[in-house]
Length: 425
Image (cartoon, rainbow, N blue to C red; front, top):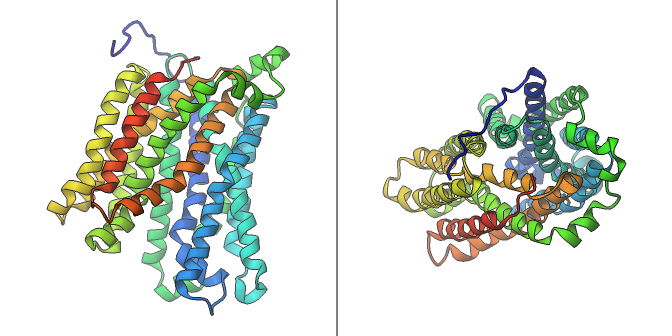
């Protein structure tokens, strides 16, 4: 069956809407803080590494610091998830904002290599690791938090709104960087303007942390807390022993999520500039269009998961994702003046991204849910987040369609994995 006509849909109460709004706002700000480093990596390289080094080496070192954030995600996510399953979702959910806001603000104020020498990149590395730990707990914690606050048959919408907030953070980062370049001269941006996005992000991050103080613990965890036998001492041990199939399926579905976001959104601008000589301004506009449409697609698809079977939706979303990838990397070269249109269509094709967190939340029981989602999500991102750009780079010399082919293969893997996943809620 595509849908269940016997389902009753309870309207979202004011308190539930407040939970969704605060969770989505905090998630958007965390992802904004995390991604602006990538947008500003070239300028960061100028300020935080020796000026006598070659430009390519400094930029490589800056991207190395960006990658350190990804490497810290699994450890940070697992540790935070452990306390989320044993101490409480709310406490960890609030802590993740602090761990993101503080390093972001310090990055905007940190003196460069010319002032404090080698201490500058070392401190920057430490701050980036803190950000990675925070982001490793934010998305899994947010999905679990809003799902356990949602009324019956509104779980998909709740998770989708949060996921839309996360992708909206990437969109917000793009907008702020674009405004900085529009309002300031190139010299001002290089000298001090690049700091503004970090300072803005840090301040609003602290605001988000303050607002999250008003959130309540999830009803599911409160019930577990009343019955102390419902809280397990070592969630990770239970996961490895009893939920290996669920972990595997969630790792593979998250691989599809990473492929969609990295190949169709994050790698699209540099690939289009390199492969088809599109201007950086045009790719920036196209990136904004793609990210905005991605956010819409995620929310709509997640809403549909409350009405239709997630397995049936995976068929439609998987096929759409493949078409979007081939449209962007295959059809666009035939219509070279329409990149923004194809980018927007590729963003709309990414509805599968919205299904992944819903499937993960449903794959684990409440006692180990935070740990299960976090472990699966962060392992997949740590492995495939780095593997995807490398694979695309290796395959591109053989065919310009390699990004689309990669997305196609991974979509098939994700479709199989999501249909083999057990449902525990």
